[in-house]
Structure formats: C-alpha cells, structure tokens
Length: 354
Ligand SMILES: Nc1ncnc2c1ncn2[C@@H]1O[C@H](COP(=O)(O)OP(=O)(O)OP(=O)(O)O)[C@@H](O)[C@H]1O
Ligand SMILES: [Mg+2]
View 1 (cartoon, rainbow, N blue to C red):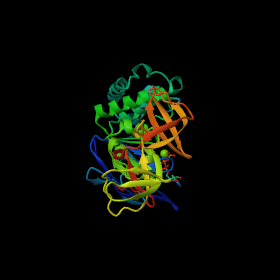
View 2: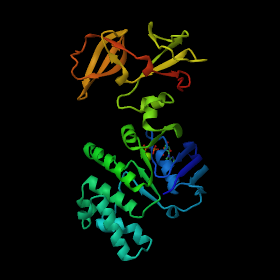
View 3: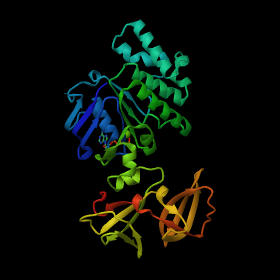
View 4: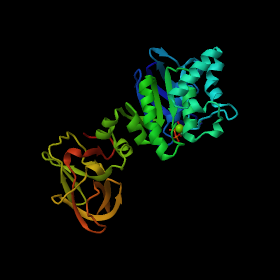
C-alpha cells in the first residue's frame, strides 16, 4: 500500500491542456474519486499515475519517492478499465493468472492466488468458462480479480461500472467499496457519476477543464461547494441558481426580479453586489407561511418524494416535497428559501462568498 502525491501535475497534448497543475494527496488505504464531466482530464491523470503517459510538467510521488521515471510494470499498480479488456480466447482462470505468468510466478503459487482472489469476488465457479460465457457483472469481477491478483500497492479504476445495467451497478458499487475497505488498498477511482463518487469515496476531487475545483469528503462538497461548478455537479437533483444582488448589512438581503429574500446574519465583507444564490431542491420548503409565491409548473414523482418545479414569472425553481402532498399542476404555491441553507457565489468568478 502506498500514498500518492501529485504536485503541479500537467499534461498537454499540443495546444490542449488536458491536466493543468493538479495538486492532490491520497493517503494510505484511502479511496479517492476523480469526478468531472467528459473531457476534464480524469483518464489522462490516471494514465500518468500508472506510468502509461509521461507528465509534461510536475511530479508524481508514491510515498516519498518520485516515480516519474519508473516503468509502468515497476509501479505495482492494478488497473481496471471501463472495457474489461479480457482475453476472449482464454478461460477465466488464465485471464486472472496472466499477470502472474508474466512475472514467472511458480505454478502452485499461481493456482493458490487465483483461487483465493476468485473466492473473494465470488467467481470461483466460473474459472473454466471463457469471457463470452459470462454476464457483464461477472466479466467485471474477472477484470477486478486480474487486477487484484498481483497484490498491487495502488488500485486505479477508470469508470469500471459504466457498462453494467443500473441495478447491477448499484450492487457492484457497494461490493467494491466493501472490498476496498477489507483489502485496504489505496484506490483512485475515475467516474463522471456524482452519485457513484458520493457513495463510494472517502474524498472526492472534482475536476473541470483539467483543473481541480475542490477536494474533500462527500458531505463537504455537498454542504460547502467552493464554486458554482461544484454546487451544480454534486447532488442528485441539480442546485437552483438565481442571479441577483445583495444589499444591506444585517440582515443581508438578496434581491432578484423585484423580490427580496432576507438572508439573516450572514456576514459578507467586501462582497460584490452581483451574486448568484444557490439553493438545493431538497432545501426549498413548500409551506403556507413561505414568503415567495409561484405557480406549480410540473410535478415529477420520485417515489418517496415529489420533485416540484415552481415558476416565478418564468424563472423555474425546483423543490423536493413529500409524496403525500396534494399539489396539482397550475395551482399557486407558497415556499421558503431558508437562509441557513443558501449558497452565495460571486457572479463574475463563480467562487463561493461564504
Ligand atoms: N492522446 C491524446 N491526444 C490529444 N488530446 C487528448 C489525448 N487524450 C486526451 N486528450 C484530450 O485531453 C482532454 C482530457 O481527456 P481525458 O480522456 O483525460 O478526459 P476524461 O475526463 O477521461 O473524459 P471522459 O469522461 O470522456 O472519459 C480532452 O480534451 C481530450 O480530448
Ligand atoms: Mg476518461
């Protein structure tokens, strides 16, 4: 097991800056998710850590050792990709055994290690089959087994669950998390799915355009987003953003479209007047004594709850409310934006002001 430290890690492809001065520390045994939209530099980062790409600038440390010049095979890293890349003509046993055969591990030891890792992943009955005779989830387990059998110091996974159907993905998500904790192998996990990152990782690094936006535990990213991008990316239903101005001292007031929301005792020194207020749908309260009023535009049942879109003269605000509510489309509705749940961002920079 190793810790990983990235220092100003940068990768340019011609004029494209895929990864831009990334600084990140991953502790021993930690599970870190690299999260961000398509093209933000997740895979490029992972391939640099694995040694497949050379950084244009910056350093990669494994513990206290710079590994920039270390060959991939000498890094003792296990990788799992989105496409499982199993060898179709080989049986499952031989697929898993492959990395050990490359290392010329004795036959009996290979036999023992393959059986043990197969048991761990509950595929011990599939060892005589070929990949074509397995389900997607079983193939995924074989790919994991092949990465684990080398007993890597570091586990790198690039969207390993995205080829599975929704149900299996949820199941494997839990199993992978459990497995990682049981084995204690330092893990870096790439995904564009915020829910996967939130549910599995100890810490999440959010990337956009090759740059780190925020790094912290899931609750921190959810509760204290550093900027508009993170607030919009993290959360099952997207955060509402309302452009307006802040005025006054205590209580601070937020004005938009001729409406005012009192923000209580928030203290904002030197705040710009042009701001963006963010509020999560699950924090908007539909209540008779709400100070805002709009019209129910659409209602989307989510099972236990309803996602209600409220129109304020065309501005749409989403709220989550209990499924027992008897709201109807087109009716007037009062609601509240609780000041303690609000985020405020500088409109010009997108950075949080709180
Ligand atoms: N070999 C390459 N040559 C040129 N540009 C590349 C190369 N690999 C990646 N890029 C560019 O670098 C940027 C980051 O790519 P990367 O594959 O790391 O994104 P990603 O976050 O993994 O995206 P996705 O979620 O779609 O897999 C993109 O703009 C991409 O087009
Ligand atoms: Mg990728």
